[in-house]
Image (cartoon, rainbow, N blue to C red; front, side, top):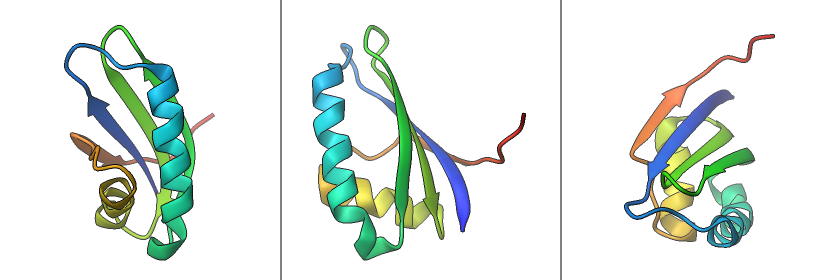
Length: 83
């Protein structure tokens, strides 16, 4: 399983409550794609959302977002955790 960080940019800013709802939808849809959305971070003022996900591929991670709520990431990076 690989780890990915995806980045969403929402023009005009983003509301934390909306991101919480989208994350809950991701959690409900992720098992179908063998994906696990782990954490997320939000910069409301700049319209940025960052999602940390364990997935077999970047495409599988994107498929969860697409099915759950349609807000697909603008960028997806494979990452490794450091200390």
